[in-house]
Image (cartoon, one colour):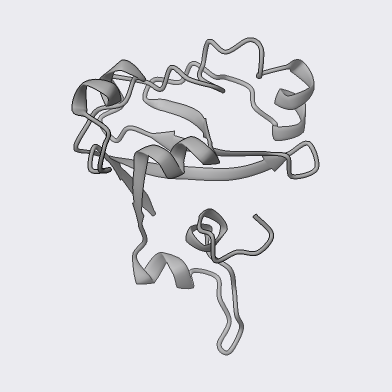
Length: 130
């Protein structure tokens, strides 16, 4: 599953760069996480190039206010500084990215006849728990 940024109406390439994102670029979604009884929903994203811009908003590598020791323990976050990898709140992913998913990734681990929610469903408004 991946997200592409730089193609959302009303957001300029300059604005993307100002928040640490590369416009017209794809990022892979490494993991999704929920903490504080579901009140904090985060995605870990990876720039496939492993270099370049990194998110500078809430839950960025240098955000000491939101990354408390308690939250790091709850999410088992050890190193925020991995090159090309960063965390972002769901609301900002929805604002800055368009998401896509391959049919293969939606079926990994799914048994025949079993309905399994996918990360894409977790990210969209089709999931009533959000």
